[in-house]
Image 1 (cartoon, rainbow, N blue to C red):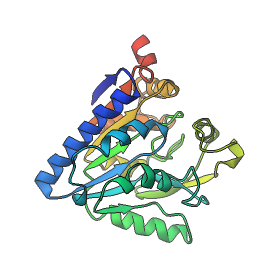
Image 2: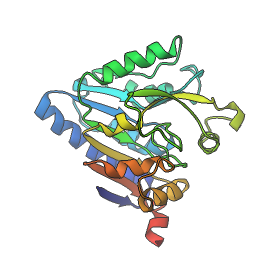
Image 3: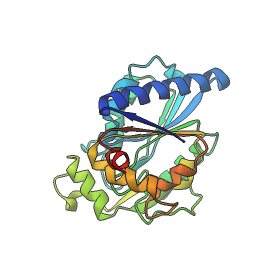
Image 4: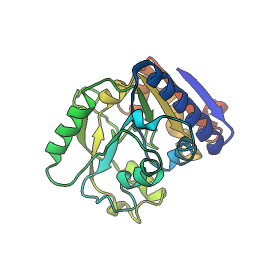
Length: 244
């Protein structure tokens, strides 16, 4: 595990994007293609702003993303598909984007997506950490046992409040109760993981991730078990660790 602490979110985003770019180029040089999982949320803004300016052969990159609210159309401001199209996918000509679709038969959509991600290894995962310590929408107590690539999860109150505080919804009652999420197990199957975690609001979650033993009550503790993990923090998100 490597930890990189930047002065602010902008510096963090730039450094993380360069690392992601270098890793993708390395994989493409070796395999001729790359497969990547990406996160969403306000913590990823600066990273995506920098990443779309990187000189990557995106036509050789296949993209998956982590999660999507059930019952939320792609046109909604909080839709993660909308987020990715507007901040990433519409700016780079990727080989294919496998969106987490939630219209129609959810189980059929999950099975299709799970089959796609299981076809080949995933080279790189860009994974955030939530205020409640979640990775993707695997809120505590997260399911560490399932081997299903994508699952239906129920969001806890702290997760919902985070979405309101980030401006995606007006009230907690407006946040959907359930979502489709990549499982913890599937996240850990990424050959490399780069975790992008800026902002003061994440300081407690970062502290608990680093100071807790492996526990599904702090799902991000699982990331520490990965063989190739780099975590990008800024001074705000690392503030409790620095003080400690």
